[in-house]
Length: 324
Image (cartoon, rainbow, N blue to C red):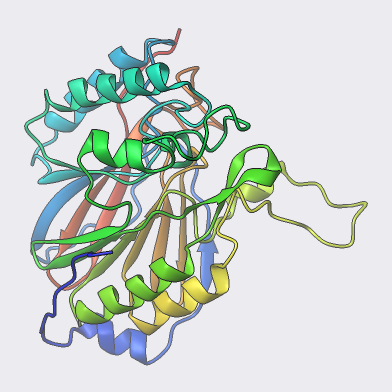
């Protein structure tokens, strides 16, 4: 595949020196309505962007109205963000839908996005992949099967790609893998091909600050909310909840000194600092699938102010949507 990456040269930052010296691994889960995850600093801000995860657009549950309200809140931010980075699950269950329904979902998504004059960079989620969860009713030979439909409909050249903005490098990686035998049709992980690509892409970015955006978390604390293993020897995390190859991914992040990882999928807010990389699991634009808050996490999106030295501020912005 012809994916883009470029070579950069940039000065070594103080943050790089601290990371090379070694860092402790600390995990903190944050849950709430409006979370500020960094202390304000007088250091110069490079730019602002918004991370909108788990939109789950659909005709039902007033989802169109809710997504428009979220975008109005984004446009009302001061300063306004330079772009919107989505976190996957743009629509609600194209994986189980027939072709007409899946087409309708993406048409509605595009129609609303076109009303925004803030550009979008999209990430793919499990709900966006046509046919994988349809229990064989959609043949794999269908022209739009798999990631092709979502890529074509939202204008992505590839499911995995990278771009640059304001001195920062963004790698957007599809980490939803096919798994037809489990009933859901997918599990989390980065393919060998994309791992090789990501290694080259991050290396080419050099010392620039780096962001990895995927749908399914690399690491997560909130997954343990749903576990109770007192009658079992081991606690097991389903591969649909987190990446199956988390160890190799973490080593890659550490090798290339990735500043920030942004994910969705769990519809909950968490922030984990591990080996100098901050992992932010974002709450959902749709909350609990447009039915209210999910585990106390109201409908919202992340607002990120990044700086030229690789540091950043993040807060979760609940935009006041009332389900019903």
